[in-house]
Image 1 (cartoon, rainbow, N blue to C red):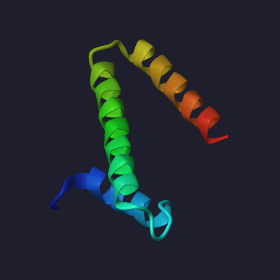
Image 2 (image 1 turned 90 degrees about the vertical axis):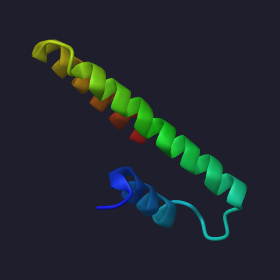
Image 3 (image 1 turned 135 degrees about the vertical axis):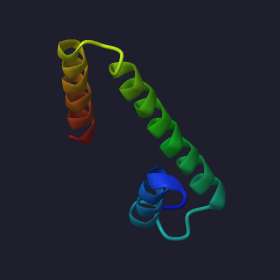
Image 4 (image 1 turned 180 degrees about the horizontal axis):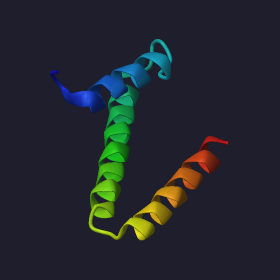
Length: 72
C-alpha cells in the first residue's frame, strides 16, 4: 500500500465533502486541518497505550461521546 491509510481517507473526504470548483487555497487549508485532526487523534491514542485499561477505556468513552455530540 502506498501513501498510507490517512491519504485514502483524505481522498474520500475530498471527493465526497468538498464542493466541486472549490478554490485551491481552500482545498489546501482543508487538507491541513484534516491531517492536523488525524495527528491530534494519533497523539491521543498513543498516550492511551501508556495508561491502565480502565483509565484508557474512560478516555475512549469520553472521546466517543464528544464526537457523537459534534456530529449531532
